[in-house]
Structure formats: C-alpha cells, structure tokens
Length: 163
Image (cartoon, rainbow, N blue to C red; front, side, top):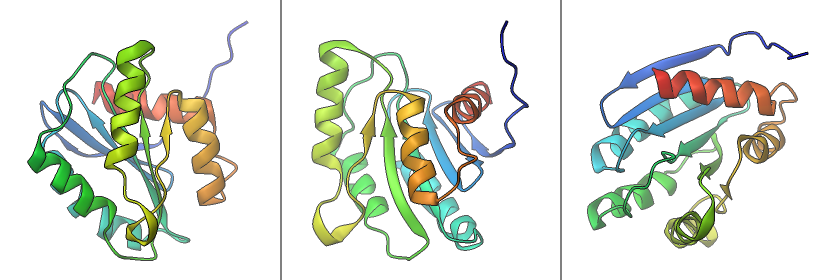
C-alpha cells in the first residue's frame, strides 16, 4: 500500500522559463529548468538574504540541477555562483547541490560542481548529492530540523519543478 504524504508547504518566490526559486521549511531551492545563468543566480541570492534573516536559526540553500543534460555554466555564471556562495552572514547554514542523474556525465558534473564550490573560509564546504534522501539528511543536520524528510523534500522539489 502506498503511503501518502501531506502536500509540501512550498512557497514559489519567482518563476521563469529558466529557473524557479522556492522555499520549504528553512531551505531555499533554486531549481534550474535548463542551463544555469547569471540572472537566476543573482535573483536567488537577492531573495535568499532577506528571507533567511527572518528564519529562526538561519537557513540553507539548495541548487537543483535539471535531470536532462545541460552544459557547464559559463564564466559569468561561475563568477556569480562564487559571489553567492561566499556571501557573508551567520544566517547561511549551508549550501548543497542536487544532481540526480547517473553515469559518467553526472559524475563529471558533480566533479565540476565540487571545483566551483568555495573552499576554506570563503563559505560553507561543498555538498554535492545525487538523491533527495541524501540532501534531506544533510539539511536536517545543518538546520537541526527532524521534520526535513526525504519524502517531504522530494515533494517540495516536485512542486517547485512543476511551478
């Protein structure tokens, strides 16, 4: 018998043809619908700070890469990602990237993302995952929120994708 879960309480903050910015619990999601671009990175950064500052205990940020194949981000987008990841503020508890695809190309994409993530004191450590369950375990830990579950996060991502 299938278990049903209540609908995720997802707030869609911004939707374009290229991306969706949404929130669920104390997690902001940047869900790419296609190729990553500067506009999506900068808009999500602008939306994150004021929203995260209102979250008791801070918030985390999740980038969801589309399941279909896309190319690596261009130089301007990589620079915007670096600026966003190194943004100051005690409200940012962590940043993660979800790349659900499998195989050589997906493994290569995860390796590229590891190189793009900040190192040392510039920002949080890189967190690259391949399943919503892995992301949920990470988010529950960094946010100290036991209600962040694999099922809830998967539903939040689905709602944002369908936005």
